[in-house]
Image (cartoon, rainbow, N blue to C red):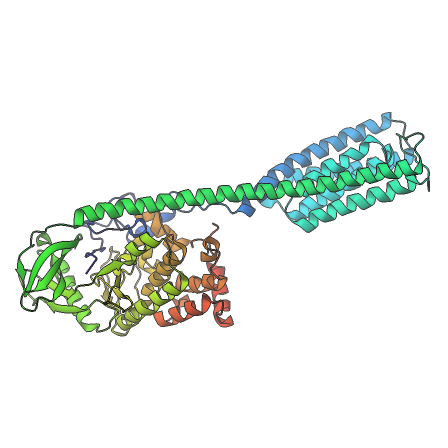
Length: 582
């Protein structure tokens, strides 16, 4: 068998305190290769998990989406523009009594300035909190400033320098989100100016502006109007192109940040994996010894509770993997009881998708052992490290095969409690036959209804179900949650829950959701999001009832053919705990 025994039951002489969460765990030295998302160095008691929100460190952070970043940028710049426009309106209103323009137009301009000053000042004050930013406010501000600009053009004249105020405001508002809203602002500005300037250029009515051109022919006046309209249009186009450039730059930055974060996670995984390999491989204390009917060879892996040896039957020379308890553990009656219980559980599960037992030691044997079929291949953790991510059809096949083992265990009244990539093995079956996925390590499994010792959590934090992480009773739906998290990891190439400490990871497991799978891998249909939202639901009752139901739903989802009933069900689940931003 290619993996090692991996004990994840955290036991202590006293109930751990919150400050202990990142460091305390009796027997926490783990020898088998392990992933960053599989860290189980120390976990909290049920009481301690309720306080993880203060210990999670940066676990609650998420990278803001591109839309969020641009909205914040627009909120800040809009507030600055609003105060500037308000101040300018007040100054212009104060200057009007000293100018000799048309008194009627001066009154119209003064009212427009007052309206613009009040509207923009209100927007500036409101945007002291950028979260209150909205496109409706930007549009309202644009209209108020537009009315003031029209009043200014009327007062100063359609061919006066006052016209330059229009493209200045137009550029700012055209940088905002929403093409059609900004296009409407441009269109209104363009039509309003043309409606004022063309009749003046053709002398349909007299130019009553403060600044009046002399000696312009109709042709020249119309060309000036056309030139101003070109400036308006060019301003709008340049602003929209600047907006798209900002979006592309921020998107490139976001991709770079996520790529660095992904590489860092993979480097941590590789480092921990290498450390585990260096500790696990090689000769063991029982190498070349005969245990039962098996001659033991090199160690395949080593965990906190025991070792797994490469072995052969002394008579038939049939290969096997033999699991032994560490000598220092033999005095722990609970550990020995768990070991023999694993023997019984494995023998009771006669399905291809669960590693088969060849022989077990008798109760009271001086060296308890389990002899299992010798598997050749690699576990899912190594497979993912080499591949990064799997094709959706491969993940469906994985869930179909592993799911049969999970459902068989559930039918036998068994909850595995530690399903994760390390405990799923891709076994080669001979030339011409496709590999098959098998479940390993029932060492921390439990019978349905069996009590869990108070103050203990078992499993690997990244793959625990929320009820498991908080010390509540677990059912087979805890294993289905783990399958959903495994599918997420295989489809996206990144762990659903990760952090710098078990406490930080457990906080995420209990309280938050990761980014939607389709947001991390564009080829995934949004139906996949729906299936995994159900599979990874915080409430066990919201999850699928069986692994078969989960695998069938995922098979339909990857083709975009999920039933409307499951889509509606997923919307309800996502409403309770929505996917996080990327």
